[in-house]
Amino acid sequence: MEYKPIGIIHTPFSQIEKMPIQPAGASGVTGEVEVFKEFRDGLKDLDGFSHIILLYHFHQSRGFALHVVPFMDSEPRGLFATRAPKRPNPIGLSVVRLLRIEESTVYIENVDIVDGTPLLDIKPYVPEFDGQAHVRIGWLEHVRKDVSERKSDSRFG
Image 1 (cartoon, rainbow, N blue to C red):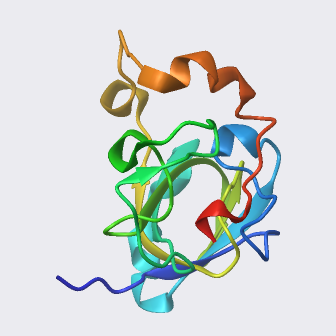
Image 2 (image 1 turned 60 degrees about the horizontal axis):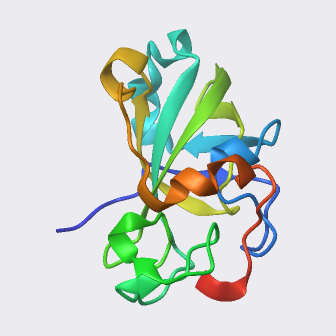
């Protein structure tokens, strides 16, 4: 399997520590997605969506463990029950607000991604496709309201 980046994500976060850990904790933080010219035509019609899903490579992540202490907890959890960046396939996902598109630059808001992150794909966010009713959120149920206050630290650097 081989993936080729389609662009680069630019944000105000030059290092992993102290950045928001999810888009919900990055309210108002803006960034830009530089889509490489050979993929620019794929942006056609994207400007009709208010939110987009960014899939990206955690390029600063090395290695992984199957049990981790996530940012939102102090107890070890199974890796796949977390959104920890150190993964067997270090792929990240963020739903961000689309502000506008100018040529091959996509302007976004509520971004929780480190600057210089390679972009793998963009998909439109569609509530009827992506939103689910009757959702359980496991161990996060008791801490989910804290996401806007939590920042990353060195544990996954």
